[in-house]
Length: 281
Image 1 (cartoon, rainbow, N blue to C red):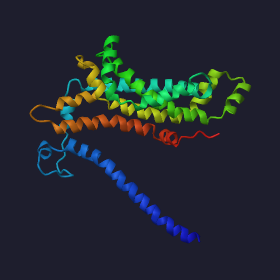
Image 2: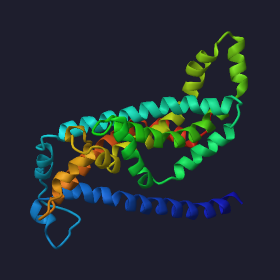
Image 3: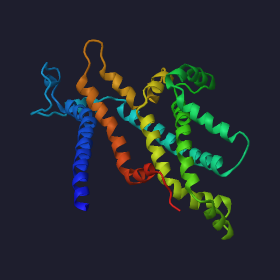
Image 4: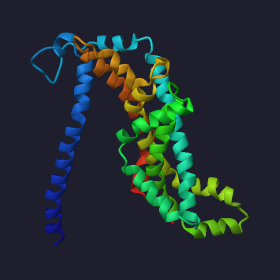
């Protein structure tokens, strides 16, 4: 009986693994083509025959990218904006999720529904109102005009996700901590915060990727002061009226992707447990 079940499960497992491998190849192929185009010589990129390999790799495209005078400044600006959004959204979402989960107050459900509706509004529909808001606040051409909108768009998702983590922590744990003399603040930061930290990592990955890859806000709110631009704006240098520098575009895109990969590798273990979504009693 066990052998028959094993015989049935094995083909299913092989089919699942083969399907996962095919999906992984499909997902990874655009990244492979991006890196391949970045190291191809200019002649092969412009060739009518697109080949999925190159026998003479070159770093000329990367050289052109790093020779851009503002590239380093753009990189630091992107790092600052993404870091500020990640830290700010994590702290605010943690406190907000704790408040809507542990405390009972009027309009609590209404507030949660508003968070959900905020996720449904397309970013493009709010770009123009946000532009006038940033103009009236005097934040145009500053990094603050990029931090605040991304912080606002990251919070609803982060609060909803962290709410489940906070709710999974038993209230008996808080009562036991109170009996031992721990204040509410001490319980919040020394007990609850470490338990929901995997959820914070999962929401931080979302915040980091969406902020790092942003082009719409950077193009809309940084009007004249290019020194405040972020890394996606560096791609515009390689788009030319007569002929686009696809090697430079792919090389710059590869450089942009590296910090995301590094960030993902650093938080990989926490991310897996965070997406697992449970804090055990």
